[in-house]
Structure formats: C-alpha cells, structure tokens
Length: 100
Image (cartoon, rainbow, N blue to C red; front, side, top):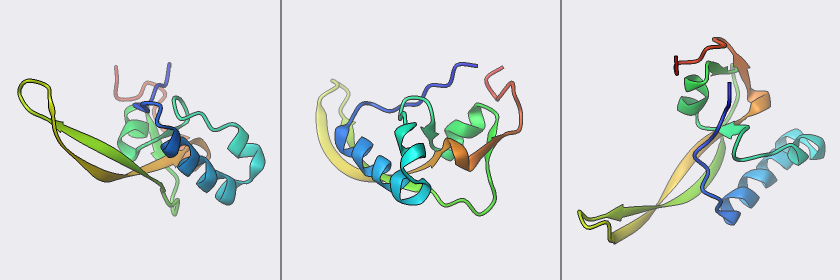
C-alpha cells in the first residue's frame, strides 16, 4: 500500500508539527517525520486501514484555507486547525484499507 497525505509543503506547518513531535516523542522519532507519508488526520489514517490508539492526543497545525469563487479566484482566506496523528499513534486494523 502506498500511503500519501494531502500535505502541500507549507514550511510553517512542517516546523510546527515537527516541534510537537520532538517534544512528545523525542529526537529520534522527530528525525523520521515525513509530512507526506507518516502524519495524517484521523480520517486519512482510517482510509488506509489504521486506527488511532486509545488515549492518543492529536498534534495540531494551523492551515490557511482559501475560498474561491466560480472563476477560481480567491475571495477569502481563513485559518483552520487540523488535528494530525503521527505513525506511532496508530495501529493497522485492515491491511486493505477502505480504498479497495
């Protein structure tokens, strides 16, 4: 299975989440952080057949959402908190995921 997140490459989001991982899991696991493959929302993990382990708390990141009109022009932006889980916080339940 090829896991891929929706991360768009925002440096501030990368730094924000990596700092939380460093504080919570230590430097060794912080080195393994890859926002493209191993840190996702609950719904994304579930789509790949994983479940968040009991009592795990999410990592938080603020993203800027752009609202566009019918012509594709950005008409407004707003901040949104995204709750993420790092790979040590989840366990595989269904190796085929919900993508079959």
